[in-house]
Structures are given as structure tokens and as C-alpha cells.
Length: 280
Image 1 (tube, rainbow, N blue to C red):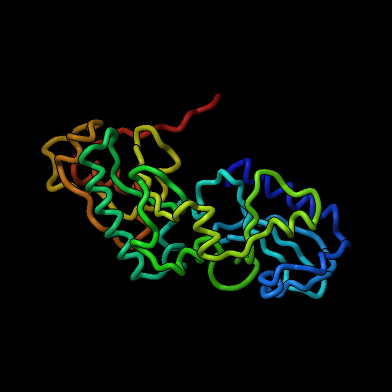
Image 2 (tube, rainbow, N blue to C red; image 1 turned 180 degrees about the vertical axis):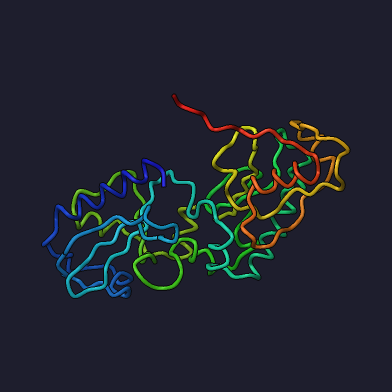
């Protein structure tokens, strides 16, 4: 989560806890009651859990007396991502192996197409889900099912980590009625409206300029046709991509650094990497 998102979550928690002991309005939305939230239930308190685990789609839990909790997926209006940096294990847990095969095939098509005009080198492509303009986004439904959109926004399975509503705002409401009135059901329509046509976002990582992102799992990898005769430093994307092509991968948690190591050790292709700054 970003610092602004963390602050937004903390503001919601603070506001709700300031009203602990009060009761929810009696006229709750029908969809919220269908989630098991009881009208007039007394507020016990709120906890922020969004940054505690990558599986958490719930950012704020409001615990209630004799009622199911309100589990809020909170996002600022300018948020771009619903699911940031999907690793292989998480992907398989949420979507399964058939979807993984479709995802790596689509990512490979993108990578080979992007390589034709790329202005920076890259050896793999990672993914996010959300809204994106330009050529690095692909319609989510070209790869996944409509129901998978709900999985990305709500989470999967049961428990506190699975959100039962969304709160999209610029600032936190000042009271409980204001918060309740601003909550939205998590539906395909509401998610699409917020995400402005839900998309898979491709993230080709330039190892020369990016550091920590090189540790993200990839859904396609660059594979040279043959080993070079001598170790060769390559910065130019046109030269790099003339040596091979991108191919599909398995769910092995392969990341950009693994590929860079393989290219250097087995193909004599050395692509410089951004180094960590050493502070004295």
C-alpha cells in the first residue's frame, strides 16, 4: 500500500473508534444486511489490516455486537490498482492453473509485441490489475472470467481478509452515517465503474533503472537462441531482442533477477542492474 492509502485507512479506523459504543443506523442498505450486518448493531471498534498480509482485500474491519463485521476495501479515488504485483502462488490460489496458462500466453504475446518498439531493455513482464490507459493494459475479460473481477476486488474464500464492501473517497467521512452512506456493494458493475474498464496491467521491468521490482514474479521470460561466444554487456534493447524471444513460463516463482542471472551464467549476456545505494 502507498503512504497515502495507509493514511486513508488509519483515518477510517480513527473515526470509527471515536464512535465506538454508538449504534449503526437502522436503515442500512439491503445489500449490507444481506452480508449479515445487523441494523442498529453497537460498534465495538475498528482495526486496519490492509498492510498485514498480501491476501487481505479488507483494509478496515468494523467489529459489531451480535452482527457480522463490516469489512471495507478502502481506496482513494485516484487509486490505479485493485491488485498490485501478483505473484505466482497468489495467482494460482485465486484463479487456478488454467488461468495461469492463459495469463502466461497473453503476457508472452504482449512482451514480443512490445519488444519491437521498446526503448529500454527488459527480460520479463510482471502483472497488476486495475485501470490503465495506453498499450500496457489488456482487457481483463480477454483472459479471465467476469467472476474473476470480483475475486480481485473482494478476495477469495472466507474470513476477515475477504471484503464485503468498498469505500472509495478522497477523504474519510466524519461520522458513522456518512461512512455507511458512502459504502458500496462489491459488484461487477461497481468495480468496473471505479476501475474504468478493468484491465490486466503489464509491467516490463528495466533492470538498469529498477531495483526492488526485479524481485517480482514474471509471466513471460526472454530466452536467447544461443550462447554468445564471450561475455557481452548489453544495454540496447534492439540488440538484446535480436538475440531471442519471449517464451511462456511455469508457476515457478521466476523473477527478473533469476532471468538476469541465467542470461549471464548460461548465455554470456550481461544486462547492467541498478545497484542499491549504500548510505554511510
